[in-house]
Length: 275
Image (tube, rainbow, N blue to C red; front, side):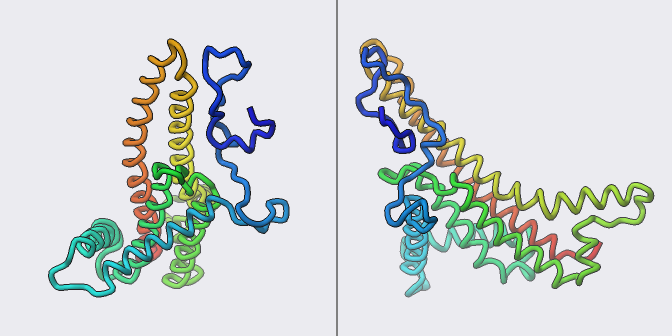
């Protein structure tokens, strides 16, 4: 096996069970989420690696898709425009309008649509040949997206309610609570300003991290057991690869949906009348 574990991003091609070459099962781990820089030096923190490339390509694909669909819109839409309109309308009506409302939510539709398709595309890289890695399995990307939502949410809250009103909004101020009000306000403040953005990012990251790890596990196991009597077990493992891939397709869309649903929920809370 490779001397440097950070170089093992998938599996060793000459390693199988029931071989006497001393190689064991190359289990996936943190090294499966590390990539050597394609450009630059990792030690200097100025570099460009595979996940950055996938994020860039994903952005170009999304912009290109909607540009091609709506550059010359037709009254009777073609197939590409129809698909784009269906996706846009699903997010606009099914997420934004349902959560924020049509009047207040219309101005946030472009942001939420962009977030949905960006997150979905970053998730989809996991099952696309050659790429085969979900960008959102690197915590920096969900954290950056969650930070954008957090700044928008906090800014809207202060803009809508002022300093005192925002403080009440963040702390869930309710004078009817009596003696437990200080404790309740402390918990709410901690939950809203610290826990909420953390869970918003980690929920997406953890699901993609776990899903990719499982896919790697069954894929590597299929190859590792492809020797002797282990071929029978390899077949079962390969079936699990197919099942997990189909399941990942579902989870990838669900996680994109949940991310924007929570985003709209936070915006709706910021725009709601004072407590």
